[in-house]
Length: 355
Image (cartoon, rainbow, N blue to C red; front, side):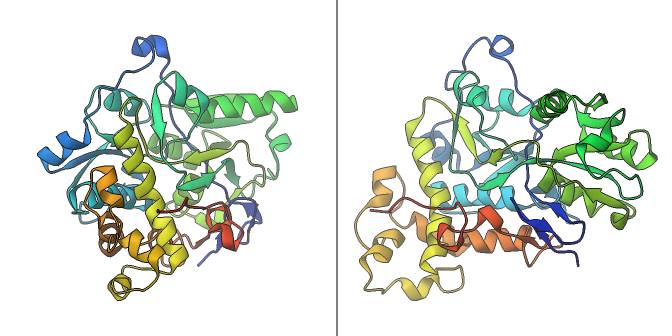
């Protein structure tokens, strides 16, 4: 099995970097009638309903896709379950609704979904004009490029005059134009409404290369007819911090999203897993007792049960468990953690104190 390294590390099979970026569409304030107000559903409404409605991807293996049994699977999907475990005490009390890049912001603004966990990049425009509140970054990423390994294409400069496929109306499309312009490289951008049609064109030879998140490139590589016949270039075209998002205007929802996501990171730092979490319930460590809700009332302060972090870890797992199952050593992709490791291991993951 190929082994890849993420965010500034070597992809050993193709000598390429693996960092992931986001293929998302931005909707302008004019299209949305100005900055969004909070049209989403409050925590109390979700609790009364008994189910969290999550906007997700259903076409990106490893992050969000529908498995052979018809159930949603993936890294982002499990973070949706994290939220359901925190808010409702039941990781399965979540409905995933598939959204295209074009649909997702409108779905959140109109209240069709309560929140997004759909390989969405934090940008200033999305924060300010579109009106999203982002939680902690769950995956640090960057945009990449794929080409056939027998094409002789080894760098962006080799793409001069090439036809490059990209999803229409996405930040990926904008990043591609910016980076090629900076380098003075002429190329033809060929846009597609969805990734499936883009991949079909790439495999048929209609386009010379294609670009998206490097995590998406690796995910899709495994589905190509001949995975060994393609190379992911070394260049990283952008920074793409991916994470969950809710609408502006609901501080409680934002706080729950923030601390629930960080609970998976803090649990990994404590060495607490879904398998051993019960062993920590009689701990004499006040930090862990407070974290698991054995002592004090951190959950109550959020409007949750005091054992919300315990429920997250028991039912879903810590960050490492979620990562390894979907992207890491226990997955077909074998992505090494890179920047998505704990700060104690040289990564960027760092939880504020639970106190």
